[in-house]
Image (cartoon, rainbow, N blue to C red; front, side, top):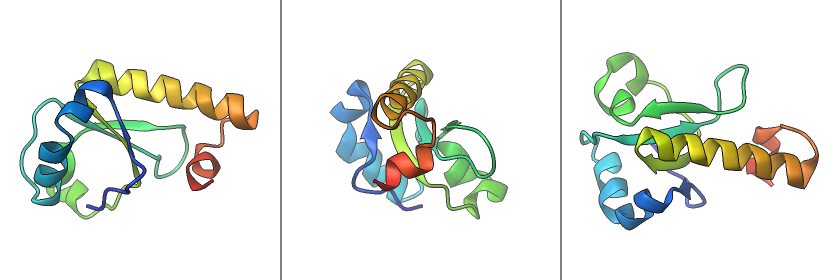
Length: 102
């Protein structure tokens, strides 16, 4: 799984940034770390526990566009809500794919 350099980290995840990134690159199990991704089809953003992409065969084959990393589900929800609001305030719409490309 590739993690882009401009990925958004939650405040708590930022404290363990190096450990989290190293574990994700090595497909190690991380409990309570969540990945925020662009949706495969419809929707705004999706939240997944990080172990889904490292330990579950069906998801290992997917290559999600990770846009955020959070330490805990509540932090993931905060990142999603803040990101959606920022997108709307800067573009006037909810086109998050365009928001992350620009």
